[in-house]
Amino acid sequence: MNYFVSKMATYMKQNIGYYLLVGLILVLGIVMGSFTVSSLSEDQKQELLNYVESFFSNVGTVSIDSSTVFYTSVFNNLKTALAITLAGLFVISSPLIPAVIFFRGYILGFTVGFLVSEFGIRGCLFAALSIFPPNIITIPVILSLGVTGIYFAAEVIKNRRKMDGREYLNMTASYVLLNLGFCLLLILAGLIEGYISPVFIKLLSSYI
Image 1 (cartoon, rainbow, N blue to C red):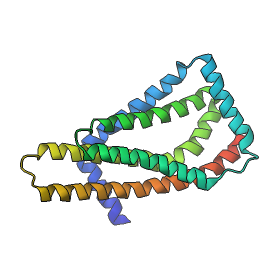
Image 2 (cartoon, helix red, strand yellow):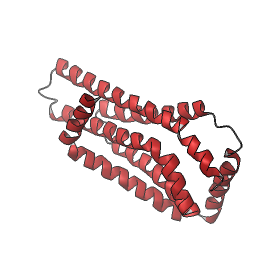
Image 3 (tube, rainbow, N blue to C red):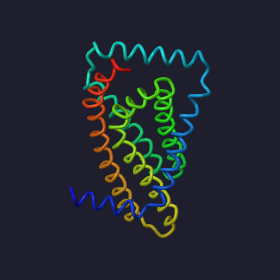
Image 4 (tube, one colour):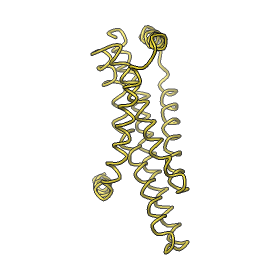
């Protein structure tokens, strides 16, 4: 475990510029998502509000299928991971990586922004206890996937004339294996979202 943490720290330090870039893109997505809440029409806000209030009014009495939440979370996160990995792998599509990261930030910013806007401190508390826990893992992993994708594409472009087939295959294998490791962490995030977050949701549903 210490070896893995040490390797990841070294990797992040070596690619700090890429991390700053994708981190900025994610933050921009979050900010844009939160600002979008204020531009919703009253009808759109009311429709979303009715949906959320209906969810909270029923969640305390209805059993949450944790396994379904887990599989849905993992499936959605792995779709994002696959999109980023393939975008980097095909090089020419690597500009899609910032777009995917921006979109993930946008969804997160919109969700939290709506909860805080409509429920105030209660929405803040709900976001902190139910949305934040899985994203402690998901956000760094998505950022790392973005960094590896951009780095891989940049290295291929930079060394395309002097890299032979064997070097390219080795580099591709390392890239895929690294991303598979990140995907394992997304499964852990899914476990948190499926089996821990629902506990907080049930506890907070009556308060919210």
